[in-house]
Image (cartoon, rainbow, N blue to C red; front, side):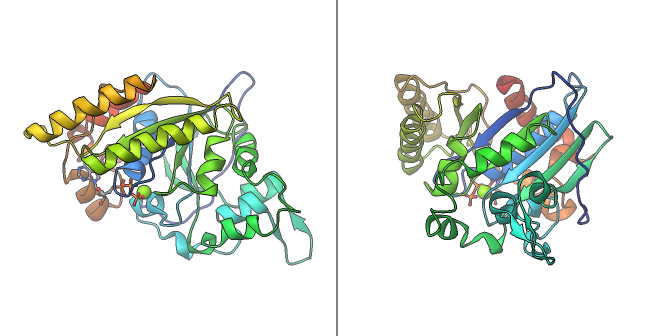
Length: 295
Ligand SMILES: Nc1ncnc2c1ncn2[C@@H]1O[C@H](COP(=O)(O)OP(=O)(O)OP(=O)(O)O)[C@@H](O)[C@H]1O
Ligand SMILES: [Mg+2]
């Protein structure tokens, strides 16, 4: 289990570029958080990658990424959460702390294998509940409310090889911010059932509506989660989803995540995602397969 510890930021060497990957769909329980954590773990365990300096950016105040490592984001001291990174804060001496100085203070270490392979996290928590309202009621201070996260990621990209973003189940200002991040790659997990298909469609439309404002964003693909391979209904809905996604000129991924309780078990019993657990890592191959397809 991780204990609360600040992450040490190490600047990237010249020529290293940072990949930014977001998991999003405005429906609960589709495996956004689980995918964010396990793809981070799959990148860390990828033997073909020498340097995996990963930052998970959890913009969901449920803070499930922290929970997956046995940590409680609501216990974070003041100015160590997403609000502080996005808006800065006023220090005790009255000075305004902004930019990288504010961001650095919010980075925590979740897991470290070596000084070249680690997972850090910058998370929202319950203090961020009013973050969007604060931004929208202070537009004179934040004239472009959709680019605050982009600015945070521009700083983070100097220190990380991968930024993995977990989003809340909403079409919100914060998710708009995600769609404005430089070179963001958007992935959409969905559980094969009718209501989720509607959400996949809406997420594609949301992405397309930002395409002219942020031409650097790419749509990585849609993939099925919690798939019950024995049921005809799932196979049928997956077929419909694939046809719909491809008709929308978006990639539909071959990889899928089967329905299993192993992930919840691992988080509950070990406070670690299963890919990072020595006992369980061989039980969840599917995230390695998904990562191979995302590479
Ligand atoms: N392969 C799996 N099969 C079935 N359930 C799973 C699987 N992996 C994770 N779960 C469970 O599914 C639930 C939802 O997963 P998760 O929290 O990742 O979804 P989410 O899309 O992030 O939800 P939210 O929108 O609320 O943030 C969790 O309780 C998780 O433990
Ligand atoms: Mg989640």
